[in-house]
Length: 113
Length: 113
Image (cartoon, rainbow over all chains, first blue to last red):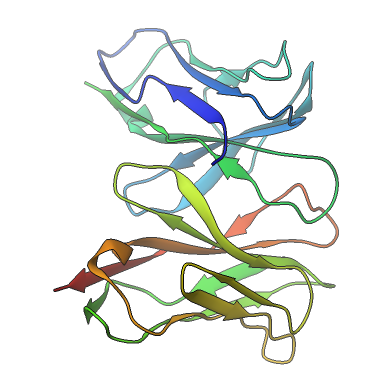
């Protein structure tokens, strides 16, 4: 069982609010990722990090930002939520170099009204 | 660029039927290949993986063989259960960037009693 956590699991919030989605892992993994999953199930990489103080944008442009101040923590922030941000957000992590799998958290389902 | 193609769903089966979900890939070099499963309301879980040609990954009665000659990694199970109802994702990790996962679009499996 992978030890990667996301909170909240569900969030309904109004337009214009600032939100932070939390992601933590207790496996000591250096590499962490955020994916956005659309209703058609497809997964899009929006941010990743190779370690503390490292953050990069992914393949899909996103208005969200991320930070990596501690190895175990990789929060995602939306400064001003919009209905177009409604989606499922999945956090993942993996260890080291080589053909290792990514471990996923349970996800946060965000609805912006 | 590298890509994964998997069969569209939904796949609808009766309990104890044989399951095949097709997955083919395009990649340079020798990627690693994965099958992930996503149960309703949850994140992705690794189901099985294979890191070199002719490797067979297996778990929970599911199997997939890395076929370099046909660039395929089809998922099979001899007798499905209602509890196998989920979305299945085929993915590859390129040999030139093992930090990256490229996903297929997912195949929904529905098993009826």
